[in-house]
Length: 87
Length: 198
Ligand SMILES: [Zn+2]
Image (cartoon, rainbow over the protein chains, first blue to last red):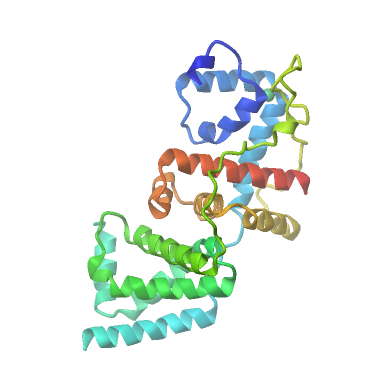
């Protein structure tokens, strides 16, 4: 992006940088341009906010767990393994 | 090797069933979700998880300690699940993932005075952020996640569903940091679009 440092970000460019921004991986210059655009552009503010909300709701997706059958099969396999291993 | 990993490995090696059961419980959900990224069904994913544990037990003495035990175990899941997927002929070699995160048609064309700015901006949405997910929204999320290409889905699962850091995600999936972030961004954008439409 360095070659474009002289001008403002477009929305189309900003949306590609949102994860780098959230992860703190933008250079200082790019972060300044990013935040300058946000100050001016309510749509990109909405986009950033929605990405942050997306991350938040993804964190609420309930955990998965193995079926009881699979778990029991694993414990049985462990017993078999340790008996042959320790015999 | 981390101290707790040393203890885990020696407990497993001496046949401590409670340790094994605790690990199956603690990591089973993540292993299952990761296997589901690559194979066709949950039943096959459960098989992959079982198979992975057997590989882990048989290779315990070869655990190289360059990573944590969890990272190593999850890496084995990924390898086995990918092998299954190849056998199922489901996953042709993936094309490089270079499409933009947001549909280019949503921005003004180059001829426009405001080229590159939003033409169809994101619609505001009201989301119950810190409540238990409404089941409809949960279904939207799960469908969106399932329709992601495997590389994107694997990163999203580890980072945003399982809460892993970037470094461990890279280790488990064998990705560079940059590539990991690109995949994560594509995946999040697609999920965001799916929520916007819901
Ligand atoms: Zn903008």
